[in-house]
Image (cartoon, rainbow, N blue to C red; front, side, top):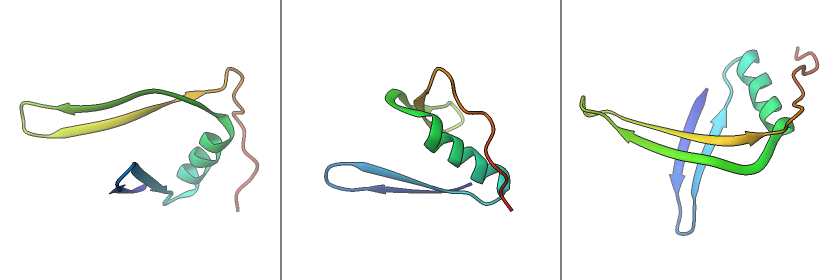
Amino acid sequence: MKVQFAEYNGCFNINLEPENKEETIQLVRLGINKTKELRGIYVDAYNNKTLEASIVIGKKKNPITQVGRIK
């Protein structure tokens, strides 16, 4: 998955671009099953001088698990 990050005056923008079929299916499922609930945004700094960030998005209680065939 290619990730691009941008900062603007009023927001941050994260673009995700799939690089294979599996990642394409994951993004389709995200689009179908997401809720507007943002459960968390984390940025962690470690002793080895690395950073890691994650964003947790809510998922519907009865998510769709199968996505039609992608050719």
